Structure formats: C-alpha cells, structure tokens
Length: 152
Image (cartoon, rainbow, N blue to C red):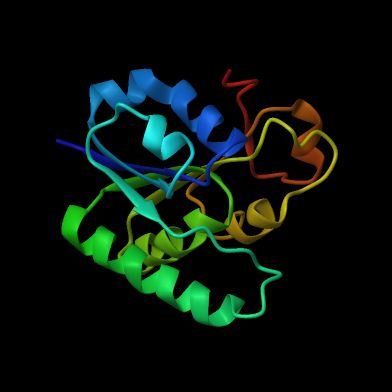
C-alpha cells in the first residue's frame, strides 16, 4: 500500500494540508510539522514534531542541519513513497531527502499566493514531481504547474 508523508509548517500551511483528509484517510499516512500549536491540538496518529526554525536567525545553518538530520531519521524510519506538502521551510529538508531516494514529491503553493511566488515555491518548483497552484494567475509564474483551484 502507498505510504504518504504529509508535511508542513504550523499555521495556515497546516490548515491547508488538513484539507486533504480524504487522501490522508485513503492511504497509509504519517505527518510532520513544527512542535507546539496545531500539533498539540491534533488528534492525528503517527505525527512527528520538529523544532521551528527561522531563516533569519543567527544559527540558521546549524539549525537547518539539525532539521535535515531529524528529517532524515523520520524518513528512514517511515519510508514514504510520496511526500505531499504545502510548505514552508520545515518541509524542504524532507523533500530534498525524498528526491535523493527517488520518491515522488507533490507541492501545493499557498492559497495566499495569487501574484507572487513564495520562497518555498521557488525552491520546490525544480524538484517537485507535481507542482500545484490554487490560482490560475500563478501559471504565469510556474508554467509547468497544474491549476487545481482552492483546496479549502
């Protein structure tokens, strides 16, 4: 059976990801998000929490490496076939790892992005197997993306 990793940062990215519950319930799934917040409120089983990091913090490179190796540990334990993400930074390491292991990556650009690309979107566009946008206007910025409308 197909195994899917659902990963996103907390906040709006997590709320968008949770709109995919039909897919989550259909396949064997596990979840990764930032510790605290919605993770603590979640009734999901098989959920991993990782430390929230900020690309503007002084120790970003060190914290990113810690996040990368924590993500690698989760990936090797769970062995997903597909990674589905709505971003942001927390999702990038596990997607890089998935690419190395030749697993499929589905990225969904944020609903909040109507006319401009997100940093995560710019990073994910070249490595995603399926890149989805929720606004038709975004196809101008991501010509190989698929327009799916809002997932809410």
